[in-house]
Image 1 (cartoon, rainbow, N blue to C red):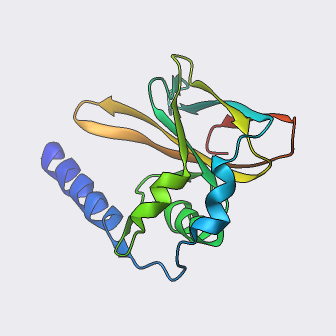
Image 2 (cartoon, rainbow, N blue to C red):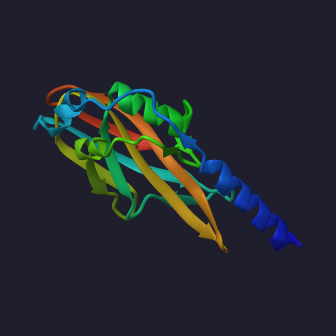
Length: 163
Protein backbone atom coordinates (compact mmCIF):
# COMPACT_ATOMS: atom_id res chain seq x y z
CA UNK A 1 0.00 0.00 0.00
CA UNK A 2 2.76 2.44 0.95
CA UNK A 3 4.72 1.66 -2.23
CA UNK A 4 1.62 2.18 -4.36
CA UNK A 5 0.92 5.53 -2.71
CA UNK A 6 4.56 6.57 -2.98
CA UNK A 7 4.59 5.53 -6.64
CA UNK A 8 1.48 7.60 -7.33
CA UNK A 9 3.02 10.65 -5.64
CA UNK A 10 6.28 10.29 -7.57
CA UNK A 11 4.38 9.93 -10.87
CA UNK A 12 2.25 13.00 -10.11
CA UNK A 13 5.36 15.04 -9.32
CA UNK A 14 7.03 13.78 -12.49
CA UNK A 15 4.07 14.74 -14.64
CA UNK A 16 3.78 18.14 -12.94
CA UNK A 17 7.49 18.76 -13.54
CA UNK A 18 7.15 17.90 -17.23
CA UNK A 19 4.91 20.83 -18.06
CA UNK A 20 6.20 22.57 -21.19
CA UNK A 21 6.80 26.31 -21.18
CA UNK A 22 6.84 28.58 -24.21
CA UNK A 23 9.54 31.23 -24.03
CA UNK A 24 8.51 34.72 -25.17
CA UNK A 25 12.04 36.12 -25.43
CA UNK A 26 14.17 35.28 -28.47
CA UNK A 27 17.77 34.23 -28.04
CA UNK A 28 20.19 36.89 -29.31
CA UNK A 29 23.77 35.59 -29.61
CA UNK A 30 25.14 39.15 -29.54
CA UNK A 31 23.84 39.58 -25.97
CA UNK A 32 25.60 36.39 -24.81
CA UNK A 33 28.82 36.72 -26.86
CA UNK A 34 30.83 38.10 -23.94
CA UNK A 35 31.05 34.57 -22.48
CA UNK A 36 33.39 33.63 -25.36
CA UNK A 37 35.72 36.54 -24.63
CA UNK A 38 38.78 35.72 -22.55
CA UNK A 39 38.75 37.82 -19.41
CA UNK A 40 40.79 38.09 -16.24
CA UNK A 41 38.13 37.21 -13.64
CA UNK A 42 37.55 33.86 -11.98
CA UNK A 43 34.54 32.29 -10.30
CA UNK A 44 35.04 29.55 -7.75
CA UNK A 45 32.44 27.87 -5.64
CA UNK A 46 31.10 24.91 -3.78
CA UNK A 47 27.69 23.27 -4.25
CA UNK A 48 25.90 21.12 -1.70
CA UNK A 49 22.55 20.40 -0.07
CA UNK A 50 21.77 19.34 3.47
CA UNK A 51 19.44 16.36 3.77
CA UNK A 52 16.65 16.31 6.37
CA UNK A 53 18.82 14.10 8.60
CA UNK A 54 21.57 16.76 8.59
CA UNK A 55 23.99 14.95 6.28
CA UNK A 56 25.59 17.18 3.64
CA UNK A 57 25.56 15.91 0.05
CA UNK A 58 27.99 17.56 -2.38
CA UNK A 59 27.67 18.11 -6.12
CA UNK A 60 30.54 15.64 -6.56
CA UNK A 61 30.96 14.83 -10.25
CA UNK A 62 28.06 17.05 -11.30
CA UNK A 63 28.30 19.32 -14.30
CA UNK A 64 28.46 23.02 -13.42
CA UNK A 65 27.34 25.50 -16.08
CA UNK A 66 28.24 29.19 -16.45
CA UNK A 67 25.49 31.06 -18.31
CA UNK A 68 25.68 34.71 -19.40
CA UNK A 69 22.85 36.82 -17.97
CA UNK A 70 20.70 37.96 -20.90
CA UNK A 71 16.96 38.55 -21.33
CA UNK A 72 16.67 35.01 -22.77
CA UNK A 73 18.55 33.35 -19.88
CA UNK A 74 16.60 35.53 -17.39
CA UNK A 75 13.34 34.06 -18.70
CA UNK A 76 14.69 30.49 -18.69
CA UNK A 77 16.06 30.80 -15.14
CA UNK A 78 12.78 32.33 -13.91
CA UNK A 79 10.83 29.42 -15.41
CA UNK A 80 13.14 26.82 -13.87
CA UNK A 81 13.79 28.37 -10.44
CA UNK A 82 10.69 30.54 -9.96
CA UNK A 83 12.59 33.36 -8.28
CA UNK A 84 14.45 31.03 -5.89
CA UNK A 85 17.82 29.32 -5.98
CA UNK A 86 16.67 25.69 -6.03
CA UNK A 87 14.45 23.75 -8.41
CA UNK A 88 13.01 20.33 -7.76
CA UNK A 89 11.24 19.86 -11.09
CA UNK A 90 13.07 21.87 -13.76
CA UNK A 91 11.25 22.96 -16.91
CA UNK A 92 10.83 21.86 -20.49
CA UNK A 93 10.75 24.52 -23.18
CA UNK A 94 8.65 24.11 -26.34
CA UNK A 95 10.75 26.58 -28.31
CA UNK A 96 14.22 26.23 -26.78
CA UNK A 97 16.94 27.83 -28.92
CA UNK A 98 19.66 25.21 -29.46
CA UNK A 99 22.19 27.97 -30.19
CA UNK A 100 21.83 29.08 -26.54
CA UNK A 101 23.93 26.10 -25.39
CA UNK A 102 26.91 27.26 -27.49
CA UNK A 103 27.07 30.36 -25.26
CA UNK A 104 27.71 28.57 -21.98
CA UNK A 105 30.81 27.17 -20.29
CA UNK A 106 30.91 23.91 -18.38
CA UNK A 107 33.10 22.22 -15.80
CA UNK A 108 32.69 19.35 -13.35
CA UNK A 109 32.59 19.69 -9.56
CA UNK A 110 35.20 17.75 -7.60
CA UNK A 111 34.48 15.30 -4.76
CA UNK A 112 33.63 18.13 -2.36
CA UNK A 113 31.40 19.96 -4.85
CA UNK A 114 34.07 22.59 -5.62
CA UNK A 115 34.49 24.12 -9.07
CA UNK A 116 36.36 26.93 -10.84
CA UNK A 117 35.86 28.99 -13.99
CA UNK A 118 39.03 30.86 -15.00
CA UNK A 119 39.58 33.59 -17.62
CA UNK A 120 35.99 34.82 -17.24
CA UNK A 121 35.02 38.05 -19.02
CA UNK A 122 33.54 40.87 -16.94
CA UNK A 123 29.75 40.59 -16.74
CA UNK A 124 26.80 39.01 -14.99
CA UNK A 125 26.25 35.27 -15.00
CA UNK A 126 24.13 32.44 -13.67
CA UNK A 127 25.90 29.37 -12.31
CA UNK A 128 23.86 26.16 -12.26
CA UNK A 129 24.44 22.59 -11.10
CA UNK A 130 22.61 19.75 -9.43
CA UNK A 131 22.95 17.81 -6.20
CA UNK A 132 21.15 14.48 -6.48
CA UNK A 133 21.03 11.35 -4.33
CA UNK A 134 18.86 8.26 -4.20
CA UNK A 135 16.76 6.97 -1.32
CA UNK A 136 15.70 3.45 -2.27
CA UNK A 137 14.28 4.07 -5.76
CA UNK A 138 13.43 7.73 -5.31
CA UNK A 139 15.69 10.53 -6.53
CA UNK A 140 16.08 13.41 -4.10
CA UNK A 141 17.91 16.73 -4.16
CA UNK A 142 17.56 19.31 -6.88
CA UNK A 143 19.09 21.83 -9.24
CA UNK A 144 20.90 24.85 -7.78
CA UNK A 145 21.44 28.33 -9.19
CA UNK A 146 23.40 31.40 -8.10
CA UNK A 147 23.81 34.79 -9.75
CA UNK A 148 27.25 36.38 -9.86
CA UNK A 149 28.69 39.53 -11.40
CA UNK A 150 32.43 39.89 -11.92
CA UNK A 151 34.67 42.71 -13.07
CA UNK A 152 38.09 42.39 -14.72
CA UNK A 153 40.61 40.78 -12.38
CA UNK A 154 38.02 39.93 -9.72
CA UNK A 155 38.06 36.56 -7.95
CA UNK A 156 34.47 35.78 -6.98
CA UNK A 157 33.59 32.93 -4.64
CA UNK A 158 30.07 31.56 -4.29
CA UNK A 159 28.32 28.94 -2.16
CA UNK A 160 25.48 27.08 -3.81
CA UNK A 161 23.16 25.60 -1.20
CA UNK A 162 19.69 26.61 -2.38
CA UNK A 163 19.49 29.47 0.14
